[in-house]
Image (cartoon, rainbow, N blue to C red; front, side):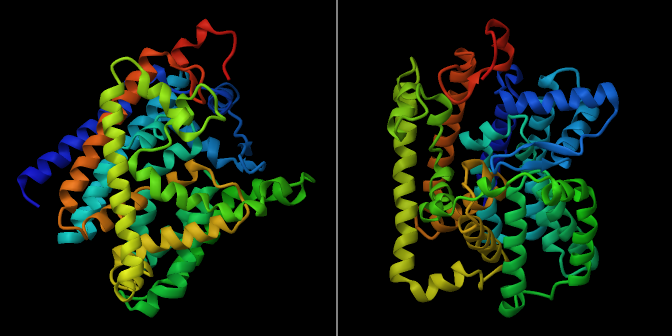
Length: 424
């Protein structure tokens, strides 16, 4: 890594921050965002903490911490309207990019560090990441918060590190339930394999379990609701969907910028190609966006193809890597990709794309890990980063010039909704 690499890195980070902070009023604002904003506003008026959060996609009310977090954001950034809350989320996630940068330099060296830095660049300019990090959603603050979770995991051989690893895992579950699957997946992977692979000192399990127990305290009202409310939670589980393995469909496509179409589509039921045609055909976008997506598609085929080749032809070499035996970096990727991925896939829940928000930046790290096994891997990643940057710029431009995406899932942007009788 030379000076040009670091110049490119900071240029991409700067672009990522700009794209997170620009045009706050264009933010997506529908029922979920309205519920969160109104809950914070109600607290400002009454001072009463809501004991439960909003209903989740799993048809279960979220714990109260999912709203308390935004009450705190409202206090810090001065809650006067939903734009302030969204701006707070944008600022936190911009800070989160640099926290990950410090995390990388504190824990990794040489080629390991380079892979992490490529992952950070991909995450910085990914259109789907930017989309989620500009929303008043509970899971939208997880990219910022997860830095502390992984930092604590790295210090798990010490009581204080293990304590915060356990406690943060339980607390983050109370912000969004996807964090519960990730926390349990990483815990199981660590408990089963970390000592076996002798990667470093053992885990301070007393600290972990004490932290986990204390982390449960804010969730006591939610536990009471879950156990004694009399509501049926059976709708949260859909075991007939297990065969779809949606988690891995998202894992292998998201690092390459696909699946923005649903936000923009004329009809949500359109095919993948149909969802993106409006974006592609928008005046001034077609050629550049089409070329960028074509480049991303080629890079995806090469990267996934390389991964399949390694699985088939280099089984003896790839299996230890896939299981995380070779290094702490590989272990972390495996704990998320295999531990979290299999757990949530077989849980029976409908795995939605935003369930990978809590996994940032590990599918990007997986992409860099595979790409850098190729001789031209650095060039491949550079091209992919620039393609993602271009797609993200045009995505934000599209939203800004069209006052949102009124015919798509995005809906009308917040600052333009005064022209409409109601939001979606």
